[in-house]
Length: 110
Length: 116
Image (cartoon, rainbow over all chains, first blue to last red):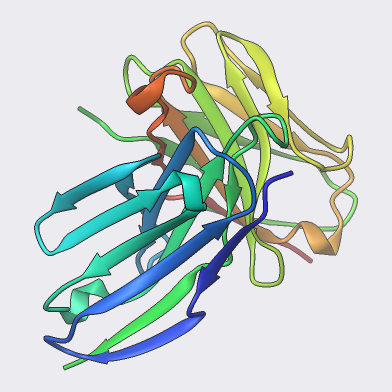
C-alpha cells in the first residue's frame, strides 16, 4: 500500500515564527488531505489538496503530485496552532484505503 | 449543520467483553469511515461504508466489524476485547468518499476506549 512519511516529527516555534511541514508519499494519489489534531483530540480538516496550491488565512498548502510530496505552511504562528498535524493520502495502490502519516507535533511558545 | 457525532465519548470495558460504538455523520453525507488511533501505531484505517455496504477494509482481525444503516448512521463492534484494543476510535464522514472534493473527511470527537 501507500507509505506516508511526515517531517519533522516534532517542532517547537516561538509565537510569530513561520514553519513548513512536509509529507512524502510513496505512490500516486488521488486524495491528499491535511488535518490538525488539537490537544483535546479533535481532528480538523485543513485542506483537501491532491494537487496544486491552496491558502486559508495563515495556512497554505502545496502538493506536487508528480514528485509525490505535499507541504503545509504556517505563517505567523500562534499558540492555538499547537497540536499534531497529519497528512492522509489515498490512491489506487493499497485499494483506496486512507493512510495517515505519523504526524508532526507542533508546540508554539508564547 | 451539525458535525459528526460519536457516542459514547468514553468507555471502560474488561478483557473478553464486547463493545459497540456509534457514529452519526453530517446530514447528507453517505460515506462513513472508522479509524483507530494509538500512541504506538498512530491513525489506522478500519473500514469504510457507503450506502449500507462495506466498501473497504483495513488490516484488522475479524473481531472488528461494522455496519451502516439506511440513514447513514454507522456502528462498529469489537468482540472479545483485548488490552491492545485500548485506543481512541474516530469516525469520519464525507459526501460520497469517491468524487474529488466530496472525499473531504470530517471527523467526530472520537470514543476513548479503555480495556482493563
